[in-house]
Amino acid sequence: MAITQIPNGRQQFFNADGPLVGGRVYTFVPGTTVAKTTYVDNTGTSTNTNPITLDAIGSAAIWGNGAYRQQVFDSLGNEVWDAVTGGSGIIFGIVVSDYPTVQLADAAAAAADQALIAPAEREDVLFKQDALDALYEAADGYPYFVQAYGKVTWDVATDSPVTAKDVAVASPQAEAELAVGFFGSRYERATPAERDYMRAMAQLGDDPVQTAQVADELGRKPSSVSPARDGLIKKGLIYSSERGLIAFTVPHFGRFLRAQPV
Image (cartoon, rainbow, N blue to C red; front, side, top):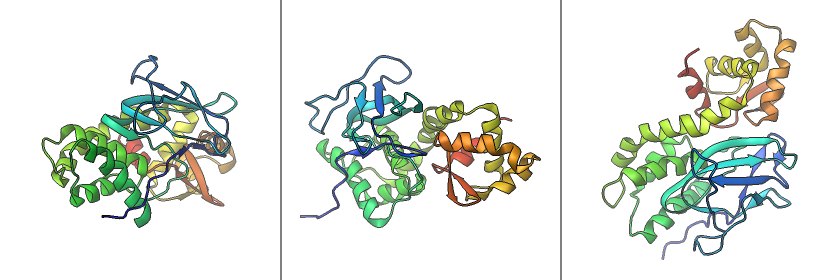
């Protein structure tokens, strides 16, 4: 009998201010406003309300079948994100916590293993360890991306066990889906000035950068770009890792921005 860490039974939602206490989560068929059902556990027998109201710690138990368009709002009705999420063909737990960026430690990686392995095993499908390792590397240790890459890998794999080669084949499609449904939706939430600020951050690299460097990149005084920085923090697109330093809340955002036409 293999003993592994149990994945969290509930998922927490965050914005730049912390847990979304009393927030609301709407789920739709991707690309539409047609409501799509989610479930309170992996049996798929008891359904959630739509919208789902988050509890006193900003959490909910959300399980789904296939892909979803997910709209999340804080308790005041401000949109936090609008993105495509979820698995495909089988019941996956939707990993939704994305602020700030948290990379997978060994213990968390074991939990992420189960998030992919457990539903696949119910369909008599296995993931080889090299496939799991490749998923973590492609996701840069970000739990949501592990499942995003895992969903597409599941779609393209022709046989069991799923291997690292399957992950390599799936990665371009997973990246394209994230560009539209995940990064694109976040980018669209930003004002033109905020987009300029993020592009300047991206040009400086993927590590936390000094706010003064971003201002220099823009050819502006730091005080004149503070409103854009503050707006991005409030929207949960960037965060301050320590005084004077800022970073994107999710990995790969800088890479996405560098690939966009100016």
